[in-house]
Image 1 (cartoon, rainbow, N blue to C red):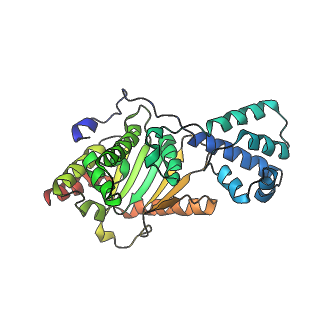
Image 2: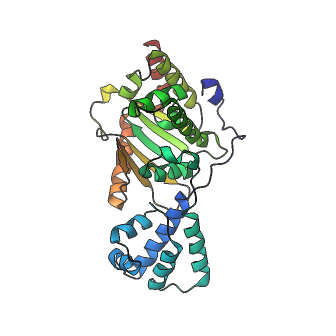
Length: 300
């Protein structure tokens, strides 16, 4: 995707709305069941025993990390004392949706279990805030740059696999060009932009693409300069997703080389929200991003 394809300010309304998936139904149902459980002063362990599961499984269900069996929902509603038939029907309908195939089902063989949840949440988010220390964020990568990054982690992949992995990454970017795109608020470390991933020509195209992306009204990019010294997220990348359903909590996503974690306790989420706030404050103002990127291009 070159600059000319994304410049012009407004989203491309010819692109379909964001595809539905199981992520939001899982979160909505999990949050509702959590509130019902806590209202009855029932522990996760007690709830787990009722459906022959562990307290860890109950925690995963309540946090929307996996699908629900309709029978388990029925049993949980029974021990929570819910007798209203309408609520039963509503929650059972949600349970059925939690096991629907994600929009990425055609690439199922390439998507690790820990990434399924993130793909669904990314498509459902109203605001995506993040910090990247090593690479340009996936939603802002060009196909050439994406291929270079993907090759680093999948050196033995076949040509066809590399092609499909790049396709999947490009498909994720459709949300930025839908009629109701999320606000993407990215802080990128200067190191990620100085490192010529894929070579000078690929990096030049990537920097030009970032400049064009910044013209979109729903994309804000800050650069964390070397001159800032140490900062709040020096340990690695962090993403905070705010969903469009206001009753749902923000989701923190921390990706590592071979997996990812989703800190879910309220104090953890608040900590990472504060980290991202600090990053935005410490980084160069967004109005300076274009000039910084142009200087980097001149230096290639």
